[in-house]
Amino acid sequence: MKLFEAIEKRRSVRDFEKTDILINDLKRIVDAGRVAPSGSNIQPREFIIITDSEKLRKLSKAQDTVTEVSAAIAVVCDPEESDWWVEDMAASVENMLLATVALGYDSVWIEGTLLDVEDWAKDVLDVPEDKRLVTILPIGKAASEGTRARKKPLDEVTHYNRYGNKSE
Ligand SMILES: Cc1cc2nc3c(=O)[nH]c(=O)nc-3n(C[C@H](O)[C@H](O)[C@H](O)COP(=O)(O)O)c2cc1C
Image (cartoon, rainbow, N blue to C red; front, side):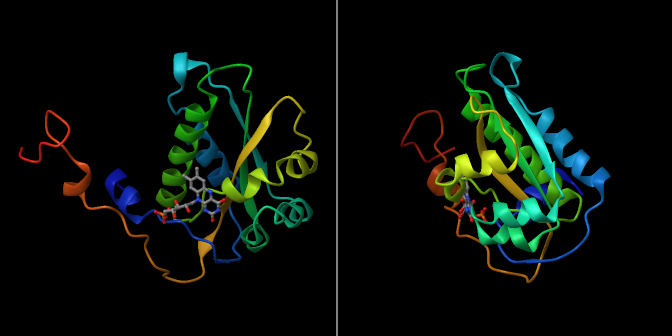
């Protein structure tokens, strides 16, 4: 799939039909996250591929969605390693979301609902205390077409040469 097609096709999916995911596909998705840019190339992020159904069940405490898939990827960051760890994590996550779509799967960026139960989730995955577990990406296939989130129009968010100038 072409890059712009994947960008346009990507949407947050929260209802999945259960499908098996090839381990090689999961590794390719993580690899897309691995090569994302990071401040000073410090790369303060690591990834956990989760296929253990009991762990997935437990992680559904963050969001029910996680029980519907047979695999998920968690992103672990070290805040001590870099001042830009949040941005570095986000760059990896977006790369992985696009790779997921390119391989024919769907996902959703679970972070907001994970924060409240982060310590619990770290325990489930044996993440060291000094690291952060900030995002989980369930990987699966959408159960339905679903709706697309409304995006602000290009004209509304684009300025030319100075803020406020709308003519090219
Ligand atoms: C930092 C961040 C945190 C998010 N956390 C959650 C979350 O915890 N649960 C969830 O269902 N979606 C979460 N999302 C997905 C957004 O709700 C979603 O991207 C937004 O509504 C736009 O929809 P779209 O992804 O389909 O374009 C998060 C997205 C971002 C960027």
